[in-house]
Image (cartoon, rainbow, N blue to C red; front, side):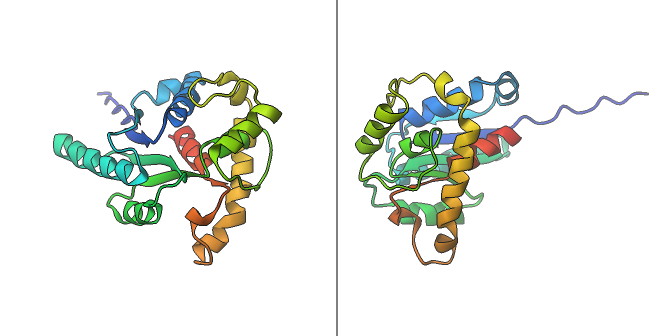
Length: 205
């Protein structure tokens, strides 16, 4: 008698984002590829909890993990919070608590803002920027005239994602050794992003 093979469990992933730009980018990234869109139907992208500071995102993630456990006993396969440096004072504590929580809550972090990840689609750089407006002005002037934080044509980015990932890896590798050895802290940098790790995780589901 032939046995029916069990259907593989679909991924159940929670992504909490600080801003609209991150939501639009991640949602567009999932939807731009037919196989990815089909395979990631249960990925949940949530925009801005009531308190959308890094600490607020972390507390919302903890809350939803507990609720998911209570509902069906099955935790999320992975939980990510996506935020940037800006002027947030709670970043060191957020990193510490996210790592210590069980299960660990992953962080996709950019300095000084998410636009640094956007910039890496066009060039490899480690140049720091004082604020997000300066990065945006640079991107619009030199690479992407149609860029806007909440309304940009993703089609002009999707063919450059592999370039962004490679540039992001180089930038992270440049800083990570000193971070791991305690020489510097991640929140001290004005140029940093590890968004590529989130995209690679989604691609590998």
